Amino acid sequence: MPLAMSRPWKHPDSGVYWLRKGVPDDLRALVGKREEKRSLGTRDPVEAKRRHAEALAEIEERWANLRLGPKILTEREAHQLAMVVHDWWLQQHTDNPSQQTTWNVDLADRVFAPQATPKSYDFLYDAFQIEIDPDRFRILQMETWCRELADQFASTRGLILNEEGRRVLARAVAAALQRASLTLAQLAKGATFSNILPLAHGQGAPRLASSQSPLPLIDLVKGWAAERRPAAKTLYEWSRVANQLKDYVGHDDARRLTGEDIVGWKQSMVAGGLRPKTIQDAKLAPIRTILQWAVQNKHILSNPAEGVSLDVKSKQGEKKRSFTDEEAKLILRAALTEKDPVRRWVPWIGAYTGARVSEICQLRSEDVIKLDQIWCIKFDPEAGSLKTSGSERIIPVHPALIENGFLKFANTVKSGPLFVELSPDKFGKRGGNGTKVIGRFVRQLGLKDPRLSPSHSWRHRIKTSGRKYGLAQDILNAITGHGATSVADSYGEFPVDALFREISKIPRLEL
View 1 (cartoon, rainbow, N blue to C red):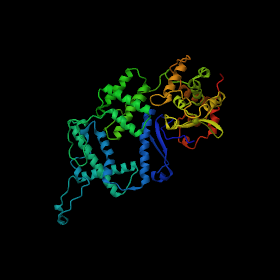
View 2: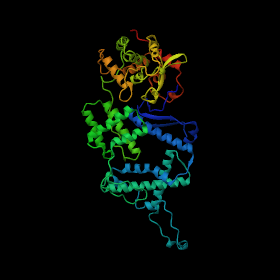
View 3: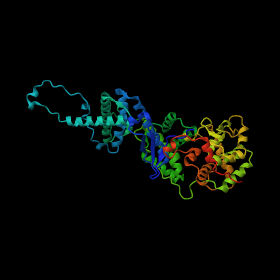
View 4: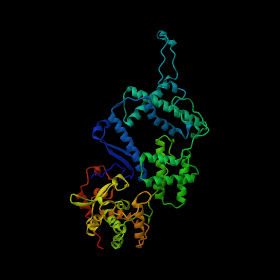
């Protein structure tokens, strides 16, 4: 079963995340290499995932364009493509707009303009009658720059253009630079983005407006969700975060948000005692992602949350840990006495698979299957949403589970959820209420250490056991649904007998 997916790769020396993706065979000659590699420029795993998704989308778009071959570019398409240049030029000079002197707005109408035909050719006989255009050299420089930008942009997007297409795109780049430079000229006189109307192509100087309609942050969340189709719980949580930011700044207009607003919000959460990881992963990351989506879809010019982050390194005594052998035995012995299927089986399945409690609680009887004469548990998105694409996997049933009657329990359910008595939460997920049930069950056994997670510490334990008993690292990652650590790990598949061989190395606990 193929389990490898493209995801950020962490450099073992620097700790910086990278994108690494093999170039398809049919494109290697055009791309000129076997693998695309680029640094994501961050050690933050959440930020790395966002940047990886954006970079991967750019690569996929470039490859798709390369497969199309030579493209005839219309003027409309060229102007749409050149909007990236418009936004880039604004961002380069927004802080100090008066320092923009590279593009001469007064000469822009003459860039790529046809040269006037001489009324006569008498100047060929009298050199003193030749009229030299003092601006011609400057205009040629501007045209050359536009062509270079157009070629660079076409190459980045994988567009193969003929000479006419290059000229059309270069003219669109010139128009984009002119619009952006006119906006910068207004900003240099004290105007703000909130009162400068966007310039349509071919218009003159910017028109000022007394106001611009607000852009509710919650509308951006809905727009992002319509495209990305997140899980219901994710949409609910991110909407809550957007409303929390709105309550802090006192308004709901994304266009009015500033970097200072985001920094102040972060500081207020720190002062309120929220854990750094919660602030970084559950608060800042969603807002940063939503605002970046807004930038990419031309709703706002820049992302005020870009670069705002928090150090999430765990301090001594805060890092989550595995269950020890004695703690694990205490829980599993107590589970043996339970009649409730959730308390009876969820800890045992977690102990010998390392699966997430949400994954376990949504298991169906049809997810317990026999492959190559080996009983397995299948974690399938048809049973319910999974955390990542790599979470879709198959894990052989550990002998300890079979000996304690798990297969008999699974056979008592003819079809559908194994834990049918466990009511779904408001998002339709049994894992939400299952987490609460297991949390109360474990804490009542006297395991109060805050570094222990009643459910997630089983995942830590399976990793610890894997290292202790010498499980192959790539197979251990496949069992837990974690990403490949190298490009080599992404090749091939994981046979069930190999998975069973490795997971069986973990001995059963003698209760």
